[in-house]
Image 1: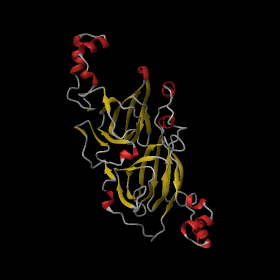
Image 2: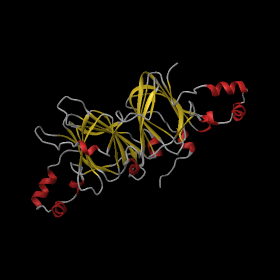
Image 3: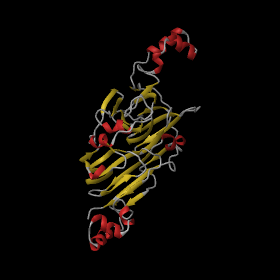
Image 4: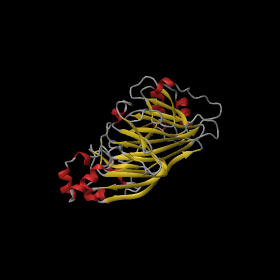
Length: 369
């Protein structure tokens, strides 16, 4: 059972956006993650977050995780090898910028940047639920090969018996795995060819998918849910990609189904405010590309983009999230009786009418005046 933090603990936590730290790497690339010791809300929400950077020719060795995840390709193109639990065949999926994959418990994956030397890095963001993992707020990945792989932990006797190898062959196989997590493929080594058909039902490209919200001069949203990426049901997470134009505002709103919002800034910059219990502003800060922050359950968040705009990718800890917005045409204020608003705000009927008359045609994004 996940242990919930008390209201006082959540209100006192530092919600400031953070960047990740390097966990390990090689000439093939690097793996970065966010630690709950630096971003306490990760532990409170039992959410893990990490980034994989692969240089040209880099290979992230086959592994599985203690957590279900959503993977989002931030940059570049490459290949994801995926073996789902109890599957008899590997999927070799071509991936590119904007692709999202849902990775359920027990899925074994490898990632490869097949680009030529000097070409763009392949960068993949991982966000997921660590409530059943070893460390709340942090992924634990189990390498299948390499110097820290499961394979090398067994004695040559067990390896020989399990894979029907003689002792010399078993010892040779175990001793020839020097890489740790990420390696660079030797020149001339052939890797599996990606299969376009393996994308079907496994990948949704957020930059090409139909828009769920499209407001001229304001912003655009693509929402991932069980309808357009069925595997998110097994992962237990929803996600969205939001892009707002320069100086536009995202309406103050909150997740009304007890979900946390975990937000990674993909590009651009802007300002964020979060309001919590008793109307207390718990966060007022600037955000920029590469930062991650978490909005506690039922807290209200709003963002305003700088001149170049603001783009973020978020997961929500429910597969079909529901949001309530406090400004715009669908605002809860528009539905409440005028008499109640007058009494609640202790204002005049004229002021209530003026308040209600605003944003009648606006949705959740507000372009600058």
